[in-house]
Length: 88
Image (cartoon, rainbow, N blue to C red; front, side, top):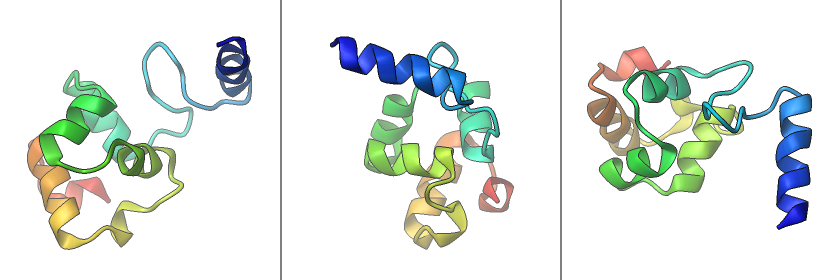
């Protein structure tokens, strides 16, 4: 457990995920919209049927939402209550 805590603290120092808000320093639109709606990554994953790790990758920028399948993009947009274009 202490290794996880150390990594979380290091992420905060390097501008990674803010462990309190769940947002990133250079926040993606998916992350911003999710936070604005008061959803956790787990809740968004459950609501969309998209794997939580995929949600995390879209939010971190590790994976581009533009590269998502149409089905995934539509599910995320619908869960966030926006037009798919707003995710880009």
